[in-house]
Length: 383
Image 1 (cartoon, rainbow, N blue to C red):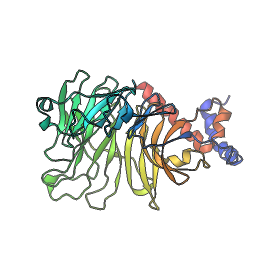
Image 2: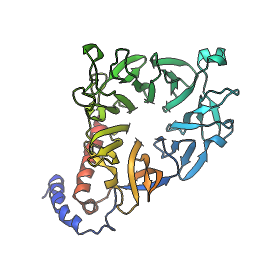
Image 3: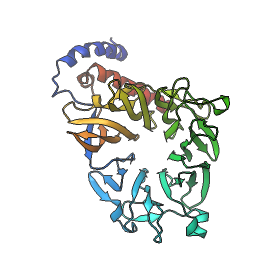
Image 4: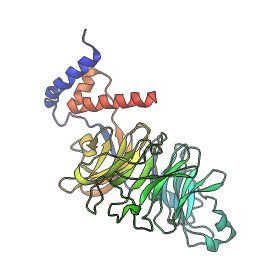
């Protein structure tokens, strides 16, 4: 009796032939694509999306600036958690001219508690943005592009990391309250680095091509950290080769950053530059990459980097240029052009085939991707 594993191996070869007999109209993409009229910044596991001043929920669009408590402010939403709580910045409070962090349940806008020095005098207040919120309601705050704070739901606030000059960025907080972001170049002209803050304990995240400012002149690019999952795996961007002003800058993965702070190169789609911007708990990574001919394409990485344009229907009219975030259901948000018009999008995985014949319908590439995904899911469940 032929084993399933041998059958699938045999099927992989035969599917090359069978795939060739499937016409373009019959060949399904791996993702369906839905147009968004705004640039998305985040998606939760329920498929709710935020970006700019909008909240998108199953096709229904809400302008956050029209909600009670918005005060006509130029709001912008940065993140949404799995309980549907939205955070962002730009809120005007007490007629102050600085932007303040806010949260929203999609029906009202509420200012987040001010930092202690701001509560004593509004003259000391600085622009504050809630960059991310985890499922317990804990928020990662960016203050004046100089400092990162962690704020508990009761308003208790603690410093995560800071820098004397502007250039600090806060990117994400996971469900274990680990915060990641980036700090600018050092006073000795060394490149900026990514940073992981675990209860105030800092880990510098660097690329393979990083040079220390204490070893002489530094010419490498800075390293940035952009997203973290609940397994504390981090993605970002950094230099991958010995220091030089023209060294390639690629998407990086820190699989266990507190043990090894040097990121792993995820490659590129033929060009010298790629950028990772999102990661989920199944170790799927999304971002954008330059190609060999100088164009930009969105990618999905799950052991190898794949152009997302190859995973949607060829006649969809889309050119996907950037992928921003991916949720734990595999849905991806980003931006591109639809028939030449700039648009946001959400990609939703097409349900996996329920039979071997269905798998063969995907063709050789589809079968390989399906097998890799199953192997990855098995690894995640075992950890």
